[in-house]
Length: 455
Image (tube, rainbow, N blue to C red; front, side, top):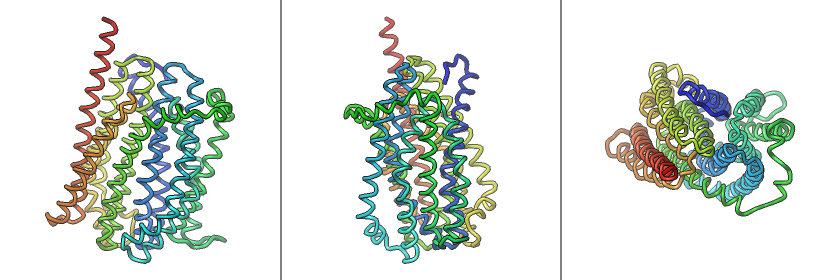
């Protein structure tokens, strides 16, 4: 990252950061994409099972790993201040937290996975696939969390292309493993949808090993991260990450768990509706990688400028990111509506599932725009390390707006599963407006603080 002086330079800097992150996010998402596509081609029962398993796993992973995202703005601000020794300590304690969080997930899953699935009253075949998929995935939880901690550190330095190349190098391995384990090719057993979980877990181990090698051997990582930092444990350093990370993680958890609850509520419909909803959500989530990647880039860029005390530049980056995200969401959402039947055909060969998926995708445009605003506004606030109010805003928007409205429209307005899509869109829009207002307030306060010091 470098200091920028013109609007054109800032836009260029955003895209230099954004494109590798986007490719990385699309690569991460494609692992789930491969699981869903191949499971859907295997059978609708396996598709529904993977959908339920993913709906349980996603809020847990994104919520807890969201804590580790705090490493990026902390590292970025230290980098802006040229405090390199502090960065090494943050990385070490981020890795410790990653292992601790992964162990918690494994222990809780061991005791509560089967009771949770039993409570959902699923079809026996769907329940079996969901259970086996999550068991397979659990083998890769520790490397996945540690990789996310190290990835956040690399992003904090602005070296986003490194992670992109690492992920692209393991994607072919993931695709081949999915094919072999889902369909039972060559010497491998035919595991159906559950095979995707095992394939993804193996991929997580591989990318962690490769990331460690890069950090140990390549500059500037090898000079920044010192092994001595791992021997000096400090509760204060962990607390610094947790103070920012916990509200970030909770905000992400409330968003993803909201989608999980909707999936669970829709699971009471027939298998066709479950499969169609999950397919449509998978497509929308794929497109969400763009504002998500923009948000990661913004967090680092805003944090870097705040650390260097260039508040005007931080402000410009914030609103540039929001504007670009909305523009991209408008374009991609429109294209999805136009080609909705072609896109839906990727997920299923069954006519009923295909038609219902295409119908759900009509709501994609408004959903994407609302999600783009809330994601990027929240990320800019993270760059300022302002996370507590954002957590409260998302809690209210997701659980007191999205779900109640969606439930009422689905069950009392005779809209069925469509009502949930409308409720989700309204809640995300409410979050976007409130977070943008908070961002304006924080930026004004920063400006006033600077003026008082000058005066």
